[in-house]
Length: 86
Image 1: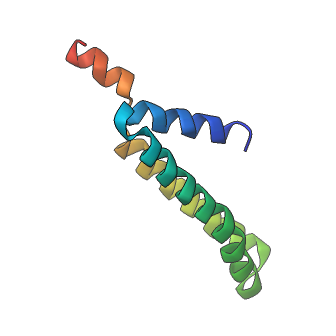
Image 2: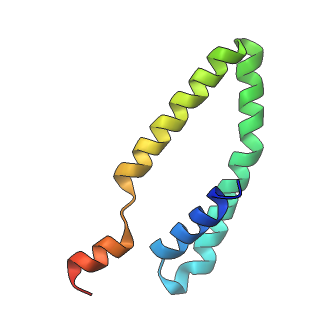
Image 3: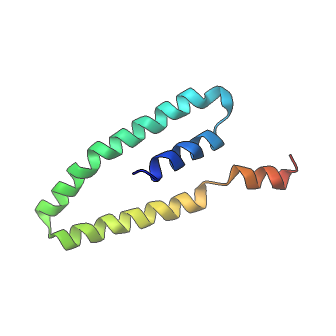
């Protein structure tokens, strides 16, 4: 948590235009809070229906899928600025 929170906040700040920073941080905070509250609930349901091992496997697959989606859909703003010559 100590390394992910500041990094994702900085990423949002890099990806958003200055005039929309407040709304972007609000959306980011909302999504973050939903994940923090829904994650344990979903994990509890998975563990109740399956074993811990199967639950961790499913959660790991979801995280890998999310990481791949993130890697292929979010671009580095600094690289884009260098390529466009700004």
